Length: 340
Image (cartoon, rainbow, N blue to C red; front, side, top):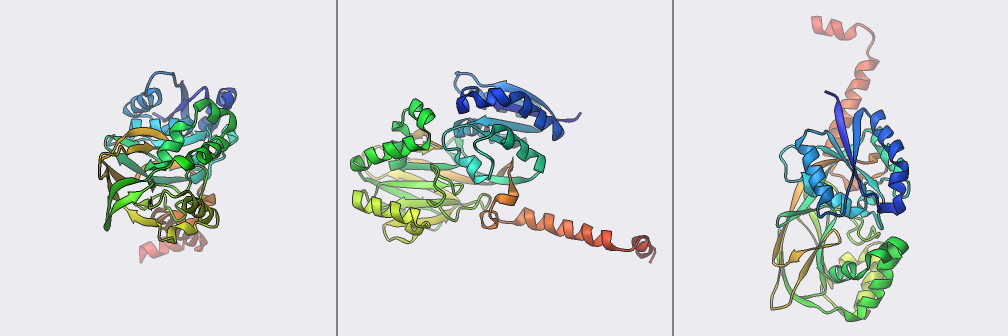
C-alpha cells in the first residue's frame, strides 16, 4: 500500500481561501507521493482532534492541519497521545499563525504552504503537555490569558493581529499581579507576578523576541516570569522586547530553560491557564515538554540553525558528505577495496 495523507481543514478559516484552493492543495500532496483525501471540520467540539485521531489509528502516514493555530492544536491533540504518530504538515489560514511562522511556512498563500511538503524537509518538534491536554506553542497564566480571551472572534477575523494590540492597550491598566509559585528544573519562584509564559517556539502573538532564543527541538520550554504589574514598568519591558529581546536580562524578569514546570497560586486568587490561546483549566497545573515528539514538515533552509539542536542535521550532513566522497571515487575502486 502507498502512503496516505488526510487533509483536515477548517472551511471558515482564512476568509475561505482554503476551500478555493483545496483541489490544487490535494494535488500537491499527490505530487509528493501521498494518496490524499480531505475532511472539513464542523462546529462540533473536537472535530479536528477526533478526525486526526481516527486517521492515525487507520494508519495514515501524514495528517495535514489546514486552518488557524486552533486547528493545528486540535490535530496535535488527536495524535500526540498515541504510540505510533503520523507525520504532520501545516497549511496556515488563521489570525497570527505563530506555529507556521516558527516553521517558516508561507502564511498568506495556502497553496504555497502546501508546496513546502515537496522540499521533503522535516523537523521533530517538541510538544508541551498540561494535565491531559497538549499544546504546540505557548502556555501561560495572567496577562496573556486575559488578553486572548477578551478579543472577540469576529474582531480577530476582521482585523487580525491588530485586534490583539488594541485589546492589549485597553487591558494594561487593569492588570493585577497574582501571588504565584512557579517551580522549574533548577529553581523555584514564589511571589507577586503579572504573568508567566512557557514558549515552545520563538513566535508568540506575532512577536519573535519574547522568547528570543527558543529552540524547536531541545526538550526545553523557555520560561518567562514577569515580576511586575506596574503599567510604566510593563511598557518599559515591552520596549525592551521590541529592541532585540533585551527584556530577558531585566531584573523584573526571570528567564530560564526547563523541561518541567509546576504552577500554582499562593492564595485564593484564581489563576487561569492559557494553552495556545484557549482556556486550559485553572492552576495548579504541571507542564511537561515532550522532546522531538511529532515530525513536522518545515522549510529547514529558512529556519536559523540556532533554533534547532542540529542532531538530525549533523547525521544527514555526514551521510550526504559520505555519499559525495564515494561518488568521487574512480569507477571500480570500491570493488577493488572490497576484494582486498
